[in-house]
Length: 295
Image 1 (cartoon, rainbow, N blue to C red):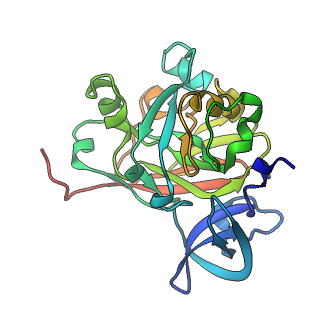
Image 2: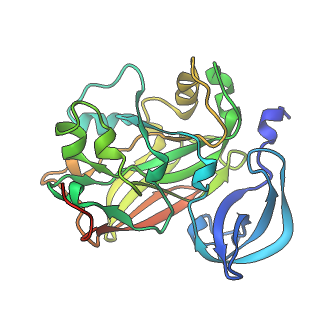
């Protein structure tokens, strides 16, 4: 086997607070008929470097709380694609992009699969708070100038994430840049774990969806991506080194609040559940911060 494919010793990587009070990386233990990592109640503890030499031990710990699958210190860069689903580009009345549309989120935007989505007073000044379910690529090995045919060999695994966005700040108040409307703290919850690339051989054949307060508002397949996972990794590695721990949010399908008639903006206490087939779901509550200072 190609050495690049030997990266994961785990099948479903989670990071969790155990009932013994310690935080571990672990390989989630799931019944044969369950694929949603969010349902994991215990895991085999992993020792070593997730991005280097590591192994799954025989120690089993009970899961008290699932955390972000990677600690912030282990995440190098958060890259995101915009307009990467054909039907989403159409609902946005925008042309199909010729090249991947790239923007970045700060590491502080990362949240866990059950963390609240905090909304500061700045983001409460106008409407436009939106959800975006996305397949998240986790890079496992340093990659530069990677051909498309080899691109998946550099993947540690896949997760699902929510590219929370504020359309007013993204499209009107940001001077043409998307960073302000995308980069607030906690606006990139992802998880519930990272499924090994050995288990998901074709990331472009997965169901992906969002439920808002239990109602399905996005339902699609990663087949609708304009730029596949392999194309995305290859393109982003041209002239730029991708590092172990880099995350790539790969865009959202149709059904976002901005594209609906009437528009559907997120509100205080809304529950947003994003789902990816073979991975599971993240369930996050929208919480408007009543104490943050106003400018």
